[in-house]
Length: 437
Image (cartoon, rainbow, N blue to C red; front, side, top):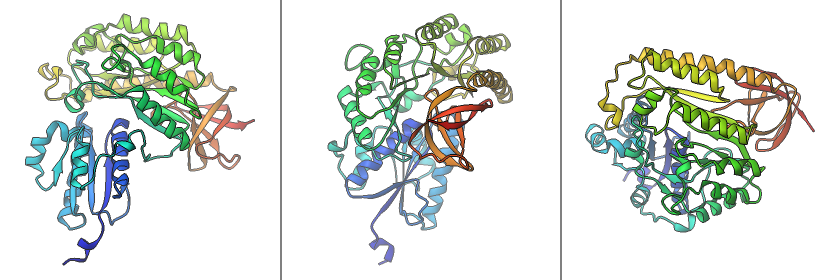
């Protein structure tokens, strides 16, 4: 008998893609550990004999990265470095049959809602008493909270409903319990995520109930910041902005993917809105809460985007002056509505358009940041990097937005603490400042 078969299994979970996948990995990690299984997340140790890869299948680059990771661990298995490779997540949900044929060395493929089946492979049970508890894979001072799963929207370009299924909201009581557990463990910032957060509650409460959820989470003792991501603009519930205005611990921040600035392309995208409606919505939000940072994402190169439609998007960005902006190039995804349209725009043109939009945004961001010089902000310290402590204001989310840099040779800050910082210098995406009392 080989010596290694006497060793106890050690499981390593690898996460690809977005924060929603990260939450799934954290839930899996919690369940495995709750069953007494030695599990870790993205461990650098070389003695993990079982690997679970949580894949992303959103766009071509993400799919390729997931496939490359699977092949890397399949190769390690063939070299005898690991015993088993399991694959779960969006790519596995969407292309399971193809993947089983192409990469038969993988021991099992699972979909996005197959957690009990994964646990069964370890002779483990789904422990209901662990619902609401989650081991975090990053610094514990912030935590993502997935308020719902799946999506019912018909967007032409999006494959998420194919991978994540229809919309299912989590009950308010369950989410409050999770928030209380997080706060007791030292979490100070809760980032609410979903495929479509504004749809929250329609299935279980028969009404849009996001504002009520945010009020209840705001009441949790010790939760300093609550941040809202992935709000869909069509049918946006304005009572959410009223709650932001009335509650001090709800960040004046809204992540609302608008996707385009041309009515014709929005129609092709099946977004259920127009450019004018989007502009009116942004103006209405800013009228109620002038001190809000709005983050949006746009897609360059969707079928039907000619030079005229692209220029309309340029004009849209210049007029709306979003505080935060990300731009993706269109990815032609099988089985989506847009896949039946001709993907006629060359990739280099898509990329050029995306780059141009980001250059415009850089100037907007630079001008907005210059206005912050001389002002003092409450900053949450995320990490120490190089010679700086790095943090964020309430107007910035983790990893995607602006950062505040504090000279570590002049000041000491503890990761996870709040400090007041007076800004003395600003670039397009970074603020520099001094700690003040």
